[in-house]
Image (tube, rainbow, N blue to C red):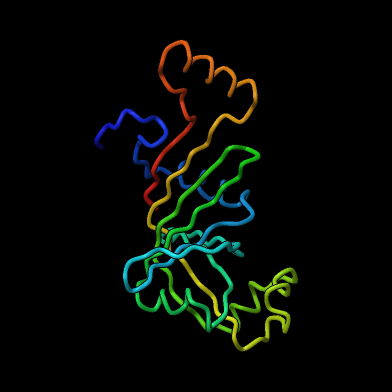
Length: 178
């Protein structure tokens, strides 16, 4: 790793089960994410979405999302399956950025199994809507920032930075290979 002397972006690469558990816990606590896909020119387009399920088994760490068959993201994933998913939980100062590969599924049994009534907000015809598709994102890496959130810790960091010229520690940061 090249050191940039920026504690908010310098991070260790971890592959341990505690780090993977932390990634899933942080994702579970964040309600929404910005889900980014790439167009033919390589430009990233992001939109807010909520994962409806986290898949965890010995070989795969995946996130599941509902979408419409005619959405822009479906066309972009069809051309380039790479995606970025960024979560923020400002109340606890936790942030996570996931990279992965998305696949589009029209699995009616899985749609029914993952369906919850709040989804009717976006899909008024319910789980039987023929335009519903699932996005399964197999996660490759995640980077997280688990920062101190109290006003007292922030005030201490500010005072330390003013006195020493050094930025405060951003808290627990790591890149996790999934």
